[in-house]
Length: 500
Image 1 (cartoon, rainbow, N blue to C red):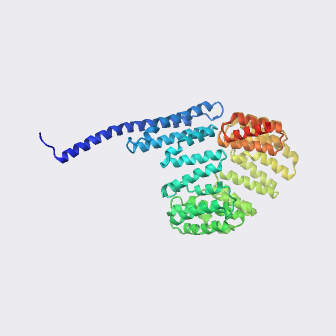
Image 2: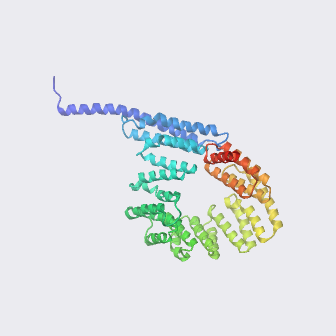
Image 3: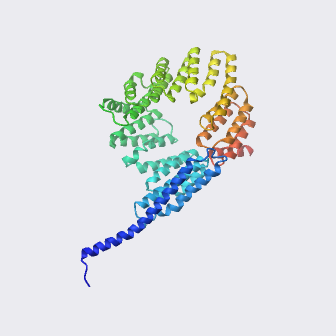
């Protein structure tokens, strides 16, 4: 029998090994594609979910959350099986984690924060050390905040920061984390607060060791945090060299305009507090506008700061600049409303009225324009023309009811509901306002934003000294409609305490 050379034997062994691993890899590849397809189909169906998540559409939301959980459970073993070759195992782990996060998002979206918390609590430790664990801890902090548990939110945010702290690539997306931790701490907002000292040290570490873009972003985060904690000297001291280096650049890099816009916004905060004069931010402001920053947003920050500072002529100049040179549907309406309010405070009633009517006509259906009918009521009351104010209030109710019939629920529809309730209460029609709130609760979708609006509306009713026989039914309806949310649970506790 002819002996094979060692090289031939080695080649045969390699071929056999490759064939075996290829067979396993082919199966893993098939499973990965299958998992991706199922996840894609779930994501597609999620986009088609009905808006009323806490009402008639709840069953569909709940079913989709269960489907995400089923996908994650079915493919999860592949993602953690050492016999599955990489990169398929890592891909399946990522798909599994994404499916769990899909379940969390859907449960949170249908006002089931308890379900979202339970899903995360059951799986988060299994993904420790994997890239998707960071996203899970970010979601967990959001769920904890929705439950009113700041301490648990801070715990998850610390784990986020620990995971990304040493990675320049991952850290950049989470540079706001130390600041969020400091702001959630129970410490008093002052420069000596331990949480602020810790966060400031983390930002200084990035500033001292990071690349130029990370240095700029960490500087901005620290400046904002320092202003929040009344440490104005730190804020201004670190902004000055960053601003100077940006102004000295011959050619701006991508993203520089956004950085300069944030510099101007931070300086505007200092201006509003009296820690800075307007002249000090003019070079940064003009650079930002010349290099493509969001002009409306940037100028609005400066105009509002000047208004807060009492420099009303300069504020009006800035608001007029927004409207005439940077007209858009988001910031120009805000500028017109701010200008009208300044003129009203100064007793320039006719000019204020012209601004408001222009706002209503030119920027119809924007949030500031929707407030115009009630703003006209306030203007007439300040002017002392009470008959005109009463007539304007009657027209405001008609306007809001007509628009509510035309516009879909959610978004502007919710704002119109708030404005209609405010209009009714201004007329002293508290029973009608109460009925509107009950109807709103019944048709609410259960989104976090809408629940916050509902809570604010109920608190506004309480502040208007509504009797308990009006407030208690609202609280009871919230407890019945949203039992798995923090708001619903607090409502139930309040009722139980009152009953005992």
